Length: 104
Image (cartoon, rainbow, N blue to C red; front, side):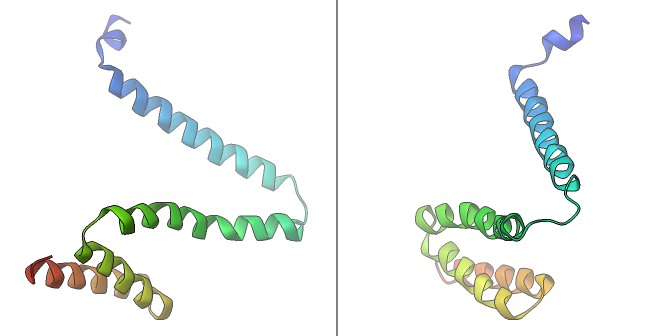
């Protein structure tokens, strides 16, 4: 039992974050599984979650990164509208390599 208290605090933060993430995901699954038919308003809210999460990840990057990274995010976003995920990843990788080679 002594070994557990010698671990630096950052590991406890990681474990607590993982437990909270798992609990919220499992809790959400339990709540949604109680519905026989998901009401349209809840379904619309659940459909909006991926876009909201993506926005919270991409928006700060557009503001705080250099022009090459911002341009790469725009290129990847435009490619993602038309093509699959693998094509988007290749296009984004190629764009950042090219733009950084050009001085970005």
